[in-house]
Image: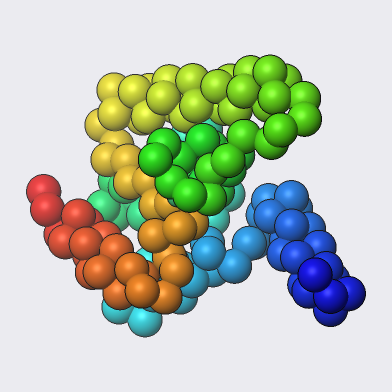
Length: 139
Ligand SMILES: [Zn+2]
């Protein structure tokens, strides 16, 4: 591995850790905006602080990192070989929280859409975003 690659990997990881305004989330927002969907950010009234909220469609969108949210059967979700138990517990906590957030939102009459970061990679992105429009258009 070269130094340049190391540097790239590092800044990639850093952008993950910061959490807010990560690139995948921006991608979804730009797409929605371009297609005439208006959304709200940091809509704190809702459980789980969804990444993107479309009040008009009563839809909350979460853009989940595959690692932190434990995307099952995803090659981007690999439990680290050190402190394995700690990671498993941490990620399970996140998954449980995600689940109860979804249930809570649904009970308040909101639709919930989870988009995984791996789904926003260039080969799948178009389909996933098209599906999102279909999802929003459904009553
Ligand atoms: Zn994934």
